[in-house]
Structures are given as structure tokens and as C-alpha cells.
Length: 395
Image (cartoon, rainbow, N blue to C red; front, side, top):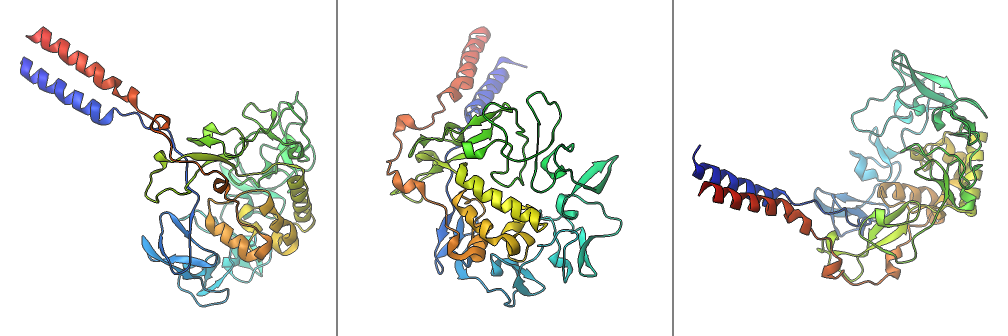
């Protein structure tokens, strides 16, 4: 290999370092769903149509009035927030195993696309299909959990107070899985909200956890921290600026882009973020959730996020007043269809999330405040030095 070939290789590598050596910028603030009025143009990848409407057309369409419950339909989106069930808009998947049904679609099915339904309506009762294994607690009866043992999944009765557990699904509906004391090494089923400041708690991740259903006392503004101890929530101050959610202090704080008086085509990297609480932990919400949990236990209703606002579910039919009060306790914006469903079910008693950014009229960030990638030139500098040294050696 001659020296000119080597030089060309080095030049090529240096070019690659400049093109691909950029360090990825930090995750920026994110936008709340853009709520579009009926009749206006919508984008299915970023917009959410207003209450009782859907985006008709993809990727660009028009917000169109949704069909009503009982209307004929051809697709789920036409019925938002309901589903198109056998050609008619209505509720589906509202009964777990052991609960009543009329057709198979009344029975619980996983919301994950592509997963088969495991329950069938047999003699008007949702029943696990023969020779099928459960995959989630909702495939089992009330106060049963789907447990894997020896590679086989089966429905097992949940535990009462002080019964052994590995997660909350191993416990009765009104209990949490936690440590009985600071000296405990294994978890048992316990009453919620009994843990005090600095006491040992369970911080296991649980995507389906109902907000506020914890072992730490939310009435004292506590939550289970990353070290497995109950810690005090210290929310970010009003209008606290951020560039990503890790810059916010409070429990469940998110970094929401402040879009007030800012051009619509402005990228998030050029916006100021505001720390906004997504969940409120206080004595009022503790009371609301205590009533809901007790009601669900009394009427044998599962505490499942996706069933709470389904008007045909056990929880909604029996505990509607407590379900609808939850809007005072958290700011749900991520899945706008869930908001649509909640508003349809609860009416005016369910309030839309507060827009905190309206209270914070900040300008665009200064150039010095924007993330920079000055360190991303380091690889290029090293290659440049290496290139010069190589030229000296080969000359």
C-alpha cells in the first residue's frame, strides 16, 4: 500500500468522523397533543381531534364528527372513543374471566396488536379458551393472578394481608405488594399508603399500575424513590424551565414545550420547556382513590386502567362517581383517546388537563441556552492531528 492510498483512507475516515461523530443532543421538551377542531385539517402523526371527533384520512385528513354509540360502522376510528363491534359502535372487552357477556367481543382481550384473544363467551360467562394459557391477570377471574410455574401459566388465587407476593397482582384488589417492615427481605400483601418517610418500600416498575396505588403515604406527599425508600415529593416551582424531564424535580414531572406565541414550525430544540406535574399526590387524591379501591373490592371489580372508563365495565357501572373524580388527581394527555373516552363516560365531571404553559409567557431560548455539540468535534480534531502526523512521517 503506497503513501497516497494511506492518505486517501485517512481523509475518508476524517470525513466520516465529521459526518457521524456528532453526539446526539439531549431529549428535548415534548408537546402536548395538538387538539384540532372539527372540520379542520389534521395530521394523524401529531394531532388529536377534539372531543367526539376523529382524523378522517391519513396522514393528512380532516377532523370529522364521530359516530354515536349504536350507529353502524366499518372501522374503530369512526366510533372514537368507542369501538366498531360487529358493525356497530359500542364498548368491547369490558369483562374479565368469570364476568358476564353476550358475545366473545365482550370479553377482555389484550390491547397489544397481533395478540390473540384468550377468552370466549361460554354460557354468558367469559371463560379461558380450552387448552389456552393465561397471559395476564385479566385472563383470570377476580382476585386471581396469572402465574407462571415450570413453564406453564395458570390462574392462581391472590393473597390477603401478609400473604406472600412478588407483585401487586399476587394480592387482593385492595392491597399492594410491599415489605412489612424495614428488616423484611421478602414482600407480602399490605394495606396501601402505610409507609412513612424513609421507610422501605417497593419501587418495582409496573406499566399498568393505577396512579396513587402505592405503599408510601401519598396523603403525606410521599412516593417510593429510586433507592427503595419513601421520599418527600418536591415539585418544581411554577414555570420552572427545563430542557428535558430529568431537569424537573417533582414526582412525575414532565418537560412540556411552551408553545405560546411561537411559530408552529419551530422545532422542540428551539423551545423553552416548562416542568409540569402529571400526577398529584395529596390527601384529597388519597381519599378519592381510597373510595374507588374500596368500591371495586365491594363489587368484585378489577382495578384495570383500561377498564375504568369503559361504561360497560364492572368498575364504571358500580363506582362511576369515584372513577370520574380522578381527573382532579392527574393530567392524562398522552393517550388522547383515553381522554375522549373519559369525557364521554363522565361528561362535565371530568375536566381536561390544565395547560400550565399559559401561565409562563417565555420567549425563545437564547443561543447560549440551546444545547451545543462542541464536544462532538473532538473526534474530528483527533483525526486531523493524526492526518498531519501521518503526512510528516510519509513525506
